[in-house]
Amino acid sequence: MRDRLKLSEKQRNILRFIEVHIDTHGFPPTIRQIGEATGINSTSVVNYNLNKLVTAGYLERSARSSRGLRLVKNSKKGVIQPVLSSMQVVRVPMAGQIVAGLPLPSFTDTQDVGDAVEVAPMLLRGVDASEVFALRVKGDSMIDAMISDGDIVIFRKQAFANNGDMVAVWLDERSETTLKYFYNEGEKVRLQPAHPTMDAIYVSAAHCQIQGRVLSVIRPTV
Image (cartoon, rainbow, N blue to C red; front, top):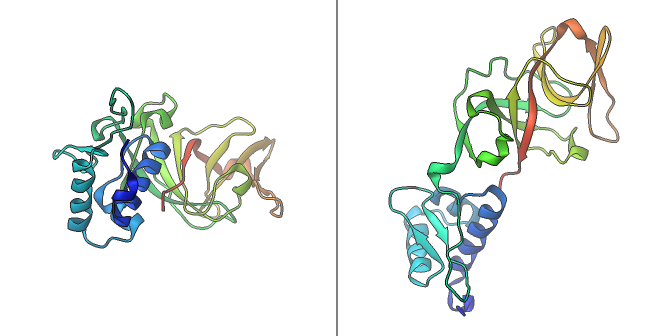
């Protein structure tokens, strides 16, 4: 059995973060993410300690990828834990920010994207990657739905919804967008928060444009 007490504090912190990140996302973090999470400002220092973890038998590395890490688990047979490689993640375009609270100005066109987020394919729920986009949440109106400020929500692009679906909705009269549960009540649409102290928003059905339905939620590792 390997003794983690023989590792430095930096190395133990790095190893713990890699384990948590893989358990949460299904694939390893980048060197930059490791540095940010463990308080190491230098990528060369992160690299040095990763190489020490490789030498100690805790990791395997691939020089061809920024996410080329594999955890080596303790076992009688010395089996390496299967982990998704960087080639197996899906890049989902980040279309901006969505408000989980009172509606505020935000994105209007999911094709006008900049950055992207890498996710495990299972988070797409079988939907083709060309049909999804991501938004970062601002606000806590969906807190009872386990969606918090700063979370990243993955959506399927669609212009329709069933009652009870959680959707991104564009309110064209206000030039605003919001994340809420959707309920069609005839001429009006009820946009229902998941928060015990917040009231529903009622808008005209003719001026409520659905942008996408929620597929999954990512809580960034800190």
